[in-house]
Amino acid sequence: MSAPGPFQDKPAIRVEALALARGGRVLFEGLSFAAPAGAFVEVRGGNGAGKTSLLRALAGFLKPKSGAIRFDHVDEPALALHYVGHLNGLKGGASVAAHIRYWTGLFDGAAADTALQRLGLAAQAELPARALSQGQARRLALARLLVAPRPIWLLDEPATALDGAGRATLAALIEAHVADGGVALAAVHEPLGPTPTQAITLGAA
Image 1 (cartoon, rainbow, N blue to C red):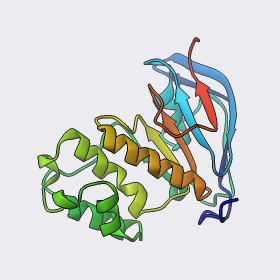
Image 2: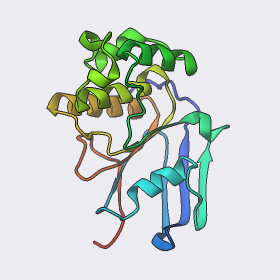
Image 3: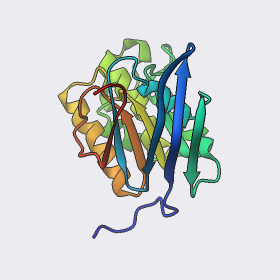
Image 4: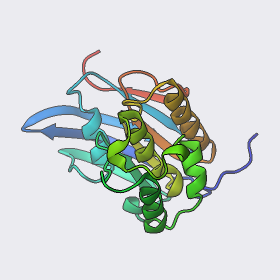
């Protein structure tokens, strides 16, 4: 049995009879599932099935049509979540190191140098974000997960633009996070690598 991780409060998400709509069209309804501490959930489905909308609803960006989203053992959901969407959210003129330092200070995180090493960006530390390849920019966006630990990760196609090494690094980050008692939900078109504890498929089979 592994040692207890840093997320001792056992954060969890419960979704009950959830329905989401976009532009007047119902994406899905009656969705219920639970993601307890240590869970890795893959959200699958075709384009337009509602994968991104589900993650945005969990993050509090989208109001459900009906149903409920509940967080257990979480005082402030907004402070317990990391949402990584399609956009990397980088400032083109700021260096890689400046981004890391900013996030570290903003979220009271630590281990900036470690994050650069883990994401394979140490050699690019002084480059402006606009000089990065798409894969490197994605790695930098994912560095937030390390410098600002949060118990719940909501990842929307997190492997976009990553090469094989980048995908392996992402898989290792997810595995370590859930081993520490965190929760990770990822919208995917194909498996990320770690074995999910649960898979949710939206849309027609």
